[in-house]
Length: 295
Image 1 (cartoon, one colour):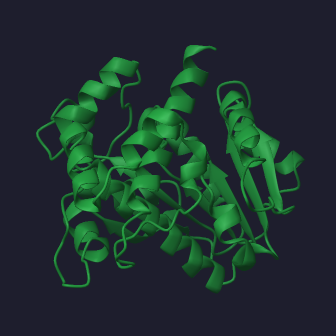
Image 2 (cartoon, helix red, strand yellow):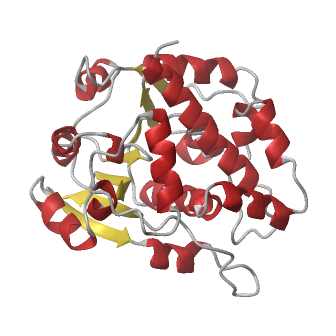
């Protein structure tokens, strides 16, 4: 197994394990709703996620990687909420870039039944995912189109168009956990294509702060994430600070709908029934939803 495939699969499983852990929260206000994540993890992660009670599971994960438990809740809820809002707003297609073990096409199949859903990912990772999918207790919707693609070998939009994607339709692009691993040039190319899609199209993505990319790991959980990135030899390449995101997107004809930092995200997604914020998220990641300017 080559290094790129190995790291992609390992990263996808780690994300799935965090989702599986946080899906066990009993409080629906903070629960990660990915009830399928548990089917994508191996024995080691199953053992960890079986820890009870839940507060102890959170504490164990927090001791390994501070901020990751709450980050899994926040990021899943943020992208889920954008998806549901955009479906209600009349989108006609969904594209999931670098899908990993994303299960939204299945979890929200009733909401998405009249739409085409395109999942693009590295061939080896996607093959591994599809092998896992056949073991799920739910049927895979026929409207999900799996597109194996090495972004270094072929433009993603060529593969999309070949698979039946329409550039004139209102589309939502979900780009979760990917942008920071790419050179800025590639990020710009992706955003440029999205800005040329049908009126009202938009993209949701998370991005690292420029300070973190440049070596400031003093934010919550930053040191542990930096050590992990060094271990797998997959450094963050792209980042923007809060005051840079709006002008950066404007250059590619996209405008900010929402842009949230850690404090805002904690307040939105980590308050339990008692009104208490259950913990901290990673301090170096922000989440943005941006729309095309061709309305």
